[in-house]
Length: 79
Image (tube, rainbow, N blue to C red; front, side, top):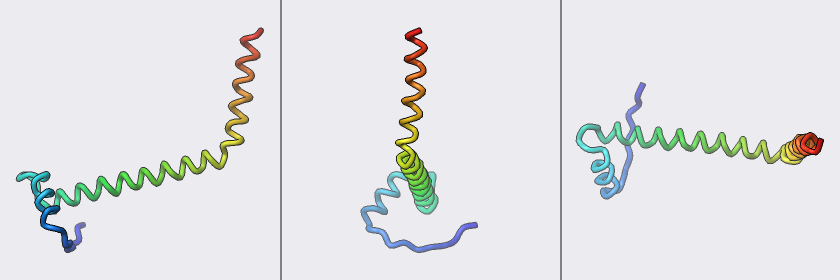
C-alpha cells in the first residue's frame, strides 16, 4: 500500500533526480527507490554496529579463547 506525501525540494535537486531517473521511471518511483536503498543501508549499518559492540563487549574472553587455541596449535607443532 502506498501513501501520498508531499516534499519540498530545491529545484537543482529535482533537476538532478530527474536527470538520474531518466525518462523510463517516474520521479516518485525513483525517489522511493533511493530512499528504500538508503533505509536498507542504514538498517544494515546499525546491525553491523550492534554486532561490533557485542564483539567488543566480549573481546577479552574471545581473545583469551583464541590464545588458548593458538597455544594448542603451537604445542602440537613442537611434538
